[in-house]
Length: 343
Image 1 (cartoon, rainbow, N blue to C red):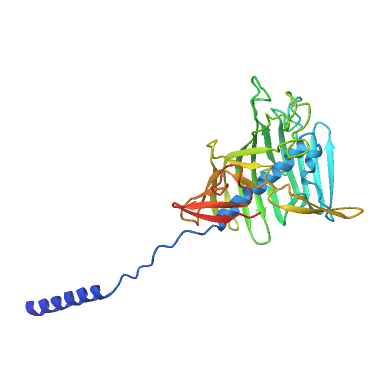
Image 2: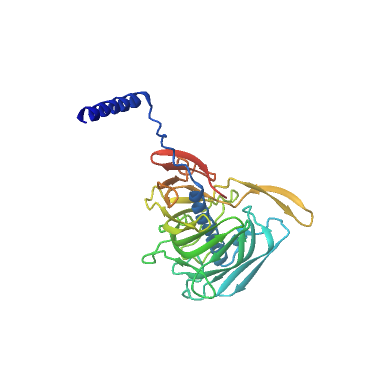
């Protein structure tokens, strides 16, 4: 019995050695983690919320012509404005309106600032506080809803600029935006919940905001070469959470708080051109779009279905101010990929 067992054992050992020598390792090479769809959606949700706040900002700065930045660019729809002095503004996109940032909008954006202090009734004034509601609001076919426990859901804007020893020529304006949103199209849906801190870094420039007491004139957001107005330069920081991929996957969007890497938008950056048709002569002219994407700064996005965190470089590795497009670099585990974001 012992000999038989030894014989079998020896034969088996030889067979194993022979098989091991003749057979190559067929384990698959690890594949690169290049699934970016959810990351792109998370960045898109943040861009849409940013633009909604832009509309509220233009309206709330005394409902001046600066609000026309989201005005009709010659489409079949119309725009109407409503004002309740010292209390509220609203803009209604009646029908589907092609705006001068190239986007198509419909619905109503309403800003109520009745609770703001008497001397802070404008967006540019420290202490300004407002609630913003959306009624049937859509942008490029995406329905944008503000979530909340009340019948009239809203997000808030607060001008958090320090007022102690304030000097408009030395202190930049700062706002806090706090909200909970759902974005839904025919094919996808996502959410955005969190707080952003927004700074108009060059509000200290008298060509962007004139005067020292905020009563002289509203903020001049857009670049104007004839008056040498440089256009706004905005930075953002904050942490956003929500769901993407038809609201099935959690994500976290963390903006860098490092001053040298904060996400920013430069109103000198207008990567698109649009055609404006004017009535009644129907003259046509091509102008730079008022669409100003994030063009610099860093953020980290973590999505459940994407095994590694993604670090997004909105400047594409370029120096600040030299990138003006809607493409980014996404780095995963020390490997960088060029990716186009959703407009």
